[in-house]
Image 1: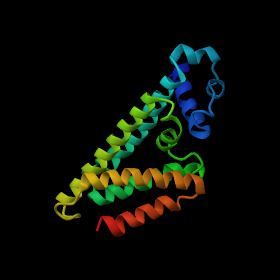
Image 2: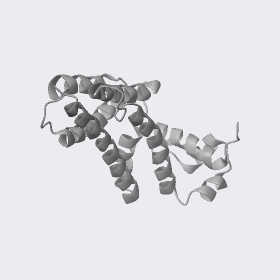
Image 3: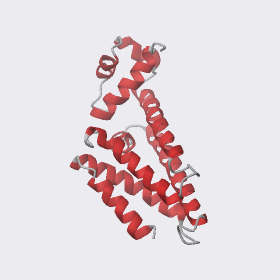
Amino acid sequence: MARQSNREKILIEGLRVVHRHGFAGASVRDIVQAAGVPQGSFTNHFASKEAFALEILDLYYANNAATIAETLRNDALPPLQRLAAYIDAGKNRLNRDNMRNGCLFGNLTAEATDQSEVIRQRLLDIFAEVKASVAYCLKAAVAAGELPPGFECDEVAGFVVSSLQGANLLAKAHRDPEPVERFKRLLFSKILR
């Protein structure tokens, strides 16, 4: 196995530190200590903490993109089953630490968008990508007859993304997956009928 570079260590461990303690609560010192690298390594690899945050967002999104490929955009599965699997995969990922860390996207949206326009814009781009994947899945559900013709796929996709983020934040506050489970129950019993 190839040895990790200091840059990779900083990104991987730094993502964990920021996810656990928040963007403001994670100092550069905390990040490099977790990575086991000298403090100067951070400034050698990242122009700023903001530049680092953009890279950990991309790293976190890469995991989400893999889940999207396996679920929402997996044409081998029935469309509404894909959407349910996407919600469950996210809930299961967040529940690995009993919902304590929440979703990095929602956390940074709540914490960093007032301080950084580039972080805010990257989060908007990520949410747009997720919304497009949900809409793709819903359009497939219409084509498969799982949803009625004329179903407002784009509008409902936006609702799914924003509601799921809210449910994730509440699950973090409660340290319980019930808000996500409630969202899923109501989505499938009331909206996707």
